[in-house]
Length: 583
Image (cartoon, rainbow, N blue to C red):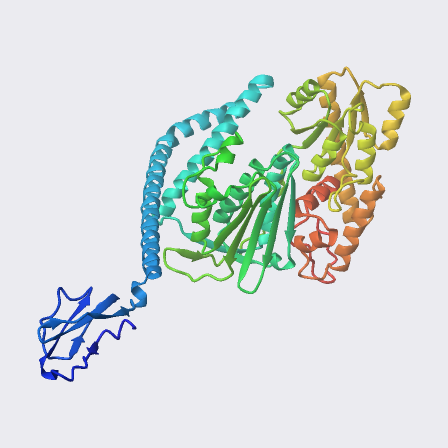
């Protein structure tokens, strides 16, 4: 019987034709009644609200005081579905799940409390460090400016300055947490091109990546070249943290890819690396706590564990979203989404009404000292040259020709000093490839870079071979340091003189041809494009970069090396004004 059919009656009778009035009945429902009923002439037994279960109904007759054998019938009242065994198992599972999530919530709250305590402790420590840190940095900077220190002392002084700067960077991160937690950080939005911004930020990391032979690839749609609203300072912190982590935890020879695109409502940024990855167990801790994954700790890379938590907070403040995918041993991919439109809220979002200028560094920002690449396979000689030239120049080192080509792709040196006898690729072959732009990316031009050979091969045949391949001069080992410095100074002075002479001739529309055919073709293409589009008010640096298939920094370096001056931000002139090419 169903659970809702628990109202029922039993009718019974005994054929007794001899003494029908002397027949009595007694019954008993096993599992429900406590005992047999008293014998009576009632031939019906009624029950109501009988609980679910299995019952046996017994009935017997008493004729003339003699009990007759009892008869029985089995009755089953089914349980309702919510009281079945399966239902009870479900209840048990639900209780266990509730208990589990309550436990997780308690643990999460405990971890959050511990994280807040750590942040509070770090912030308090950061505030205490500000004054002594300033008192460390200021004398070191003054000492560097006022003292003529060279050699090992200069190296140690620069090391102290670099590490104090790194410490200041960590302190600033901690103070950012305090500003965010106190809602003291606001979005200050301005219209800028994501493409120009990202290229500029990438350029500052290329040398660091080159030290680990990590290739950085940048892929962007045409859509990200139009201005959008974002907070430049906060986006710099977000991007720098992600790219710094990618370089830090990507092994030698790895690859980092940065991708940017845009649709009708958002613009997207992706940073993907081929690094050590994040384990599944540690992934749930990212963005939530001050935490370093186990494999990151084992990598022996220095880190505080606060970078990604800061990134998550800044992305949220920027009204954006961040997600990631990672697989240990294969790499990590971070995907960020930022809106194109923001609602101005008092005290939270400020939209600047002034259009931001493009994120293109000026020449003084790009380079303070001339850049020299020293290609030398002897570490002691390379270090000696670096220490000798560092007071006057930015010096970069490469161990052979292959490394030198890679360095030229990452930054454009203004002079190359190279040995001849080296493994992998000798100095002659390096000179030839640089002068012919062989095995280099399409947007990397090196034919204009002066090439100075410093070697022990002083026989006329080798000297002539170097000059024939395009070397500007030849210095024999052993050499005098002052003579080398004088030659370098002369090379830069000659370049400066030729640039001014060429510039004057260019302005008078009577320019002489450059000595190098590749440079001449480059300048002819550039000049022809400018002359054709001179009346176009939209002619600017971005248009030139697309036409010449070069990044902004590379175009600055190339034109500056050939003309001595950078291209202006606006190249157009009024129609028929007769204004010469505005370099």
